[in-house]
Length: 300
Image (tube, rainbow, N blue to C red; front, side, top):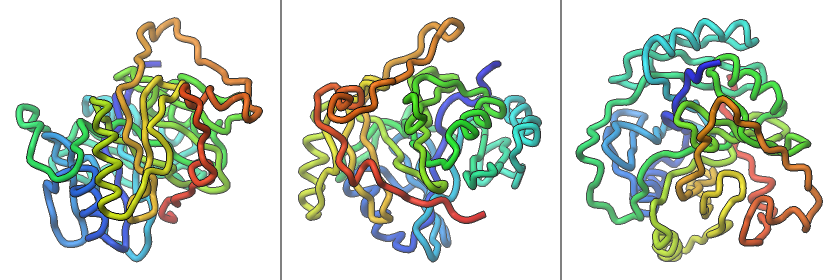
């Protein structure tokens, strides 16, 4: 099956403290505000019009996960597969200005995705002045699902995404798209639908030092890291944003080079502490706060 989804397109979050989230995203992470209108703010780490979208609301929750397809034909193909995958189309109108085509669908588990064509990108102006760290791009997200196997099936049937790696008990699994990086979505087994974290890419390791110092300036701290994940081989550090969702800052991932013959890795060693280095090559175990984190999806 062909990859219809190429990469993570955008993350849209509801928040009841939008000013604090703007401050977090600009002064700590180092994004820039590209558009601000009543009830909605777009932010980006590069020349794209939007990567993180904040929606003013009465609650803090996940609104939608945007998945980028490269052509309108790929979006239409994804839309044609929604019903047969047991999901429901909510809209075929793009939620962001400048997007040519999109389809938004909901899964029976309560997750919501928008498959859309690329967001407008001023690719020759990727850098800008910022007080924050300044990542390079939106990288991936880990979603929470009460039925990871069903969620992976839906993402494969509708979007053409494929499994790159999973734990044998499905507590964690990872899926890749057309850009072939190890994962653009992770799927975490949970009691209800939600978002575990969204991630921006740090191209240089010294950026973690700056992140830690900026967090300290705001009397905040890192939740976990820096470290290096074995799944994806990327470096990482995590902290909480003002809405209560985890933000990951991630180094570049390994790439699935031979897509045709690739076999997903199955992690069978699940017993702690012997499995710690299956998640962090450098050996620091994930804290309970990270393992049990839950940021809900907006109720459909």
